[in-house]
Amino acid sequence: MGKFDGFLLCSDYDGTLGEGGGVSEENKRAIAEFEKNGGMFTIVSGRHPHYLRQLVEKNGISVNAPLVGYNGAWMVDADAKREVFCGGREDLDMIDFIAPFYERDERIQVISPHTRETYFLHCERGGKIDNVATLRRLSRPPIFALIAVTENEKDAEDVRDDLIAAAGARYEIARSWPTGIEIIPSDAGKGSALCRLRQMTGARVVVAAGDFENDLGMMASADISYAVANALPSLRARAARVTVDFREHAIAAIIKDLENDT
Image (cartoon, rainbow, N blue to C red; front, side, top):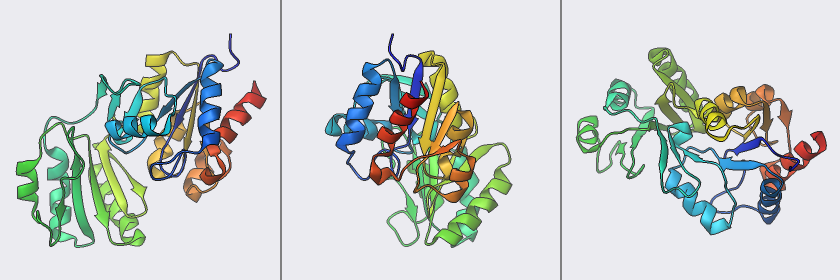
């Protein structure tokens, strides 16, 4: 038996595990050792799951649990060859929900639905597609999430609050970066993803690591939650533990901390 048997470590990517396309050698070595000793590791991110697979392959990261993309709404096996969960809506309701906000609130500069094929289809003021009707016509369900982008952080916070008030329990809404607001089906966020991963893997201890608003659900669903030192104050306040800045190899530090607990 390994000292990490039954442990599942779920890490956000950007600002937690790595930055851009790179992951530190310290993190990679620690993940490999964690798995060698019985642990399970995966990435839970807002990015397309096939981008995550490319990232894993490029960096030589060992992942032995399902990869989670689109902030929980789409899960694939560790090789990204088979879908294990589809939380996308088979309609265009997310676009219909955001349409009146985009049409009357110029603080929203871009709206972009995330589909199987791409997350680059977007409606942008002054852009090639500048009206919701055209965006709606070109979008193909399932729609896993929808991004609304503003020019500045204050606008994003205010628009986020307006969307939350209008959505009720219909959608989970949080910022994924300072000016990017993500709209996700309420049963398909990162918190729900951790519950699904627990069932799929049989993990007895689920550990989460993150840095931004869209990680709050993951913090709540984990047995042990870590915020990196560079995380938003609101996330650090909700996490059970705070570790080092992600640039200081935070995942390696978390694994060392877990080792000290066992």
